[in-house]
Length: 261
Image (cartoon, rainbow, N blue to C red):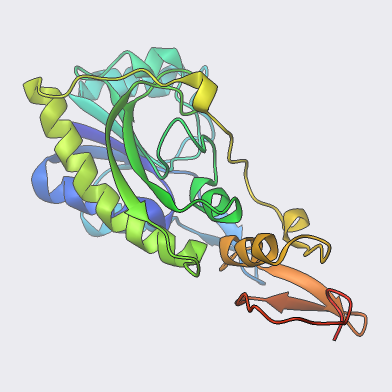
């Protein structure tokens, strides 16, 4: 099948690789190169790196909304699917309506829970015991489209967001291929999301990373896990910032004040 792929970070790389190996990827959309590191050197996205290695056309629009040139370009490709994995922009209606079978998104949560930019972090921060991937037909909302397939992963009490990221990125690629095949041959029936069961997983920032020692041990442990490897939970020790990458809950009676030692 002819596919246009839209994605940006490392999470999207296995999905693009799987599509390259199984279908005809016509072109790749990714976010513009951004300054990175201490030298603010312009750096291409991981998706762009893979696309260029495979000699695929790369398109990097600042925005898709009201971009008639991009709409015309996509129409020229006449894709069967547009596949989106952590692209970073919401697709407008004029693009969603172009592909023959629709626009399919791979989302790293069990929808309708944890819609938004950072689902795998927030499911750990909130202490979930199960999460997974969901594929869906995209609409104009934020992760509100009809669900297609899902897969569950059990979470132990010590898994970090980085470890969960690596698990979901690999399993999600297979789920995506299965979804495209099911949609094209008519064996998958889309299921509407129950908005009453939804919750939001907003983008992370460093403000959330400060540990509040009045919280329970479990909540602090979950915060540390959910923010590893970024932005990393922190506290203060002798007037200096101390980042905490790992923690363990112990059943020990203590007499000193939480956060003091």
